[in-house]
Image (cartoon, rainbow, N blue to C red):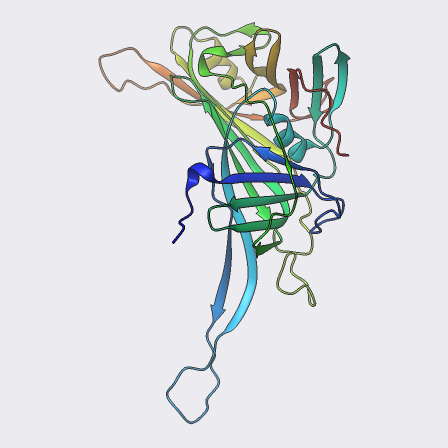
Length: 317
């Protein structure tokens, strides 16, 4: 009897032309990933009907909840597809094998078809109407550099054949922790030991309608909230006083590999007040949570992400 193995599994991605609908001729991509935990939950509803016996009647079924997380490597090519799922088609410039893709917040996020493929069986678990709800990563130390992508979707279909006849395999070129840097107000910080970034896209997942077969009929976007934290040696009071005085600053999280790079620019940031504290006889650290916002920034977005690589276009075909 065959048994599904993770090593043979794949995660396929395509963009929807209309929410919840698989394109007639889908262009699918074989996405690099570390873990994929997309799942369905559908409650069984207790029946309270009395039928002159003590036996429980057949339960009804509730709405379907599609949700889950995907752990992906922060790389030079595949990350662009996830950025497009968050921010829409980027502005792209360049030629001759070096391209700059700029992603900014938009009014509407694209929806995705995502398929967890188990070819050993074979079984193909397709999720429609998926949108990125949260995106988060942390760096510092020597662990593999990954991002957590949390998704909400509309419906699931299981079949014996994939939704796309063939998948485009992407070149895997990973960034590492050692290629990371962080700037505060344009100056590189050499005292930061850890940093994290979280983008919450404010999706409203409560859109179940009569006649919708218990599936979400839409996933409208709310306010984009960007936050995170940095942990640094407590070597001076510069960052501490910026938090004390609510001084507006900026942060740049960047990974660089030769001519290729990935940069998250938060043009307007306020640090939250905290105290360094004295936890031991060793060196003291300061942990500073922050929130990004948009007020007067020239970038026109709470977060501006710039990806420079050899991939020519992320435009949806």
